[in-house]
Length: 141
Image (cartoon, rainbow, N blue to C red; front, side, top):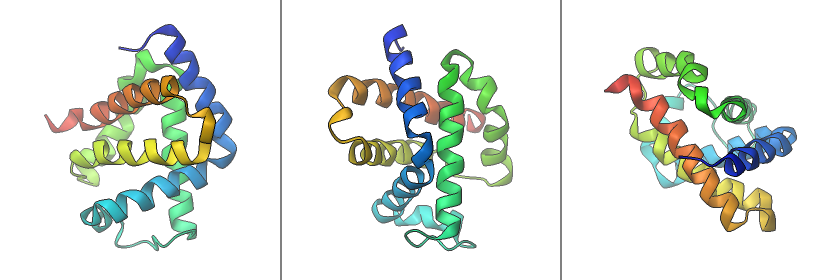
């Protein structure tokens, strides 16, 4: 799936983005809500307006989970097991939303990283986020 260099690049990117995790995560969520309005239903109890406390908090939590998963990609299923259970059985999130979110995250990364979001970084991140989304959706099968 991912080469050693791609894994190292992914770790490096997420470590650099940790200080702006809330901004990137909330940006990706806003993009998802705008592109796929049906995804808002899972957040109806929160203020999901731009820069809201709820949106920034949840966006940061998502980026932190992604960063944690990037630290040991080969153990992604183990790392994400609690999130799989939460999203599948308690929150009952449509598994398609994970893939939709991964695409929105790619756009958010491109905007935040600018020229540092090279074609190589884009390809590696796309592979990683696809794997991340697939692992979160595993409990639905």
